[in-house]
Every structure is written in structure tokens, then in C-alpha cells.
Image (tube, rainbow, N blue to C red; front, side, top):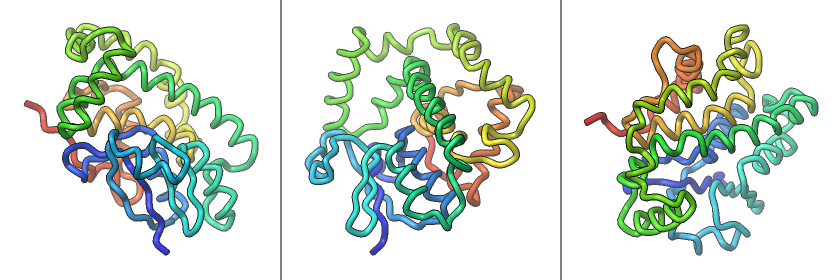
Length: 231
């Protein structure tokens, strides 16, 4: 049975943009495991409720279903030990857990720069849900959250400086080659790249160069993802 991955999609079913789904996509590619992408929208909770989840990613692997990107990574590592390791051992998994938590926070740091653009990529049913829930969380309209984002971009760049410092001495967070640590952190940057025409990184930034290397992995799988054209 072919593996299936439920992934958050916009009005274009090929535009999958969740940072958490991208972590899982990259992990599956790292393991060399084929899968079929199942586009999913925010309002389609009934489709994944049988798998004990209301959020994606959800991986269906034979008679097993696993929800949550971190849980999926652990499942892949344990179920396919003969495939390339995502963590390089238990100590690597422990350090990746820290990055998983840090990256979850980075989603919140990046959101104010792109959130109104995400809304524009959704179909009508998801737009209503997205605006209602996100504006309740932020306490402000989506358009207000992204207003003046160019002037605030240096704040994001300063917050990302620890990542930049790491990339001064090694090409990937995993060292000489990427591992799940890279896929964790790549997720929010791919989220921004796919969902918004606003570029959050400068071309001379070490993080930009790392993102370019990540986009080239697995025969450019992430680079081929549809993006929003600049106006």
C-alpha cells in the first residue's frame, strides 16, 4: 500500500505550505520513502479525525496512522532503521527536540510578515476559518499584522542570528550533511517562501544560502513547489 501524507493546501491543491508538513516531506525524502500527497484544508477535519487528529501532517503507512511531525519523524526512524538516519543516534534526537521547540516559536516570529498573504492563497471556506481563528489569537486584523513589515524585517534578522552563527562554521545544522534538524528549521522558511511573495531573507545572508542548499536537496523537490509570484 502506498503511503499517504495529508498536507495543508491552499486553493491550489499543489500549493502545500504548512511548515510542519514540510518537515515530514523532507524526512520521508531523506529516508527514501515514496508517498502520495493528500491535499487537506482547515475545514476538512472530518477527513483526519479517524486518525485521532484535527491537524496535519498525518501519515498513513499501511495499517498505521501517525499524526504530528515530531511523532512522524520518530516513527520513521524506528520503523525504517535500515534507511538513512534522521537523527544520527539518540543524542542527535535529543538535540533535535530542542530545535523542534525553537522552530515552533519561529513560526510565530515569521507569521506577522506573511499572514495576510497566506489568507489570500486559501479557498473561501478556509479563508473564513483562518481569519476568525488567527485574528482572535493575534488580537488584530491580518492586514494590520503585516503592515509595515519592511521596516520591521531587521527585528526578524536579529532574532535569527544564532542560526546564522551556526552556519558560519558548517553548511548544515546537521554538520556536513543535512538531517532532521535542518528539516525542522527549514519548514518555516519554506512556509514563507511558498505562501507569500514577501522575501524575508536577504541574498547575502548565510541563512539564505543555506535555504538554497535545502531547496536543491532531493533533486530540487522543495524548489519545484509552487510559489506566489511577486506583484
